[in-house]
Image (cartoon, rainbow, N blue to C red; front, side, top):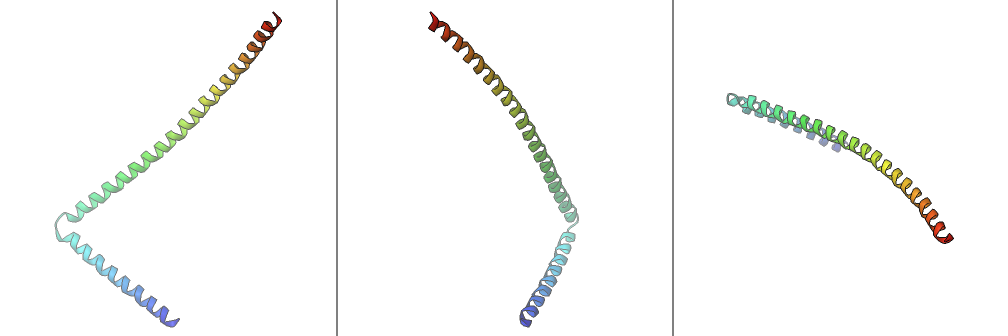
Length: 104
């Protein structure tokens, strides 16, 4: 148990030092050429802006879908009510016509 903790602590420390060294190397690589870091920051900023614009468009699309579903549902319910009313009128008229034919 003690050995496991010791190995875990050693591995965490080793990875921390490696990451710190890698960050230093990356930092100096970005700074080695004039304007390289600025181009990188501009590219990252552009990607972030595109991602935010896409998220806004997705939210707007979801809202439009919800609105369309509500409107479509109300139209369908209205049409069903009209259809049911038409069927009731047809039933009354057919019954009247049928009774009239049967009487003659």
